[in-house]
Image (cartoon, rainbow, N blue to C red):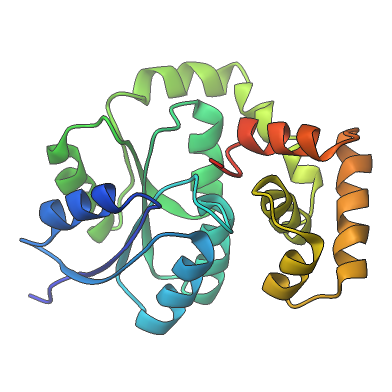
Length: 213
């Protein structure tokens, strides 16, 4: 039987080491990265079978990184392991291509169960969330992200980088666009979200899981 190849993505080194200890007896860990952009690069280069990833990561959040990874590698299985328990995050993760969703306070055995499930083509959600998820989705609470979805993927990238304190020139270099284009995107974001300062943009990004900075 082929050993699954797994890529780890989390912005905390201790968490990555914990993941490694749990999965190594049954998987080959092909890499570990600490931000969303590094995740996209590593995934397209290493082509793993599984990716364990967080939502709140620097440079590019896990949900937007997942969208990019699934576009390049449709067959890869994504297992989110995060602190975000709100059902709206769960909904967004699965829309981005997740096969499993766990919390960082989930039991280690659940990660083994999640790996088993996704390798069989099934889905897995931690037992800590199942009841609340069904209730909340039936009440339509996933609308938390409706306003965020008015933004384009590029605007979400710019918003996250602004919230992380990057300068216009730094954002332009990271995204390979001109500073004027960055300024344009920032202005459009402020217009769509009815926000007027960088501090308000940062608060919004934090509230919507775009950054943990």
